[in-house]
Length: 218
Image (cartoon, rainbow, N blue to C red; front, side, top):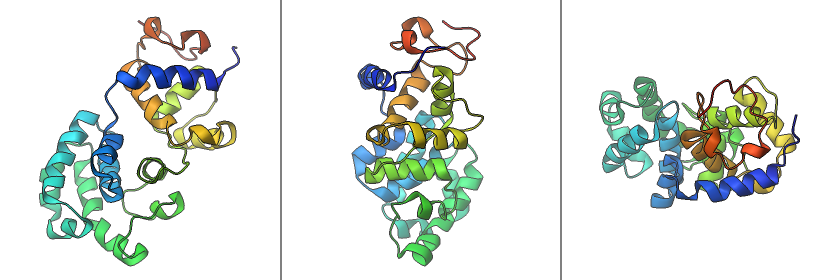
């Protein structure tokens, strides 16, 4: 088992993914600088391809400029705007509930801690961490399926699910990487380090990786 040098891996991937498309949540932050729109996009993006989320966000934000605008739409109208994002009916319900929850709990402001965000409808730890990191530029360990897979594939952690991976990374990963590593590893996971048949022959960190669980690669 190779010892993992996360500093070398981070530096190599940070350079490598520079030419990839920016993940949709980061793109919305760059375009809008609006924590509300980052939160809404993050809720929509769960288990959905970035291209689908990008199109849905464009349709929704043509109608929804601020939090109160969501209250003007029915659940059915929101469904129509965000379809075909994954679990669009559930997400429409959460988005319809969001203005009231923000009003009752946080005085119509988007909270900037994980502990507060997870009390909002449709917001789990992954979503909360991503909003904290992307919208507020605060250290937060956001672990989705890409990060969970790659960290275990590297051999940096040995965990069973994203929550366990988050807890391990909080212990092991330097805080200087927390706000940006999700963006980098998601781009890497979407384009090169795929779940099945990863492109190991083109991988910039192949020599650093233990390739745990990789049965077949390209």
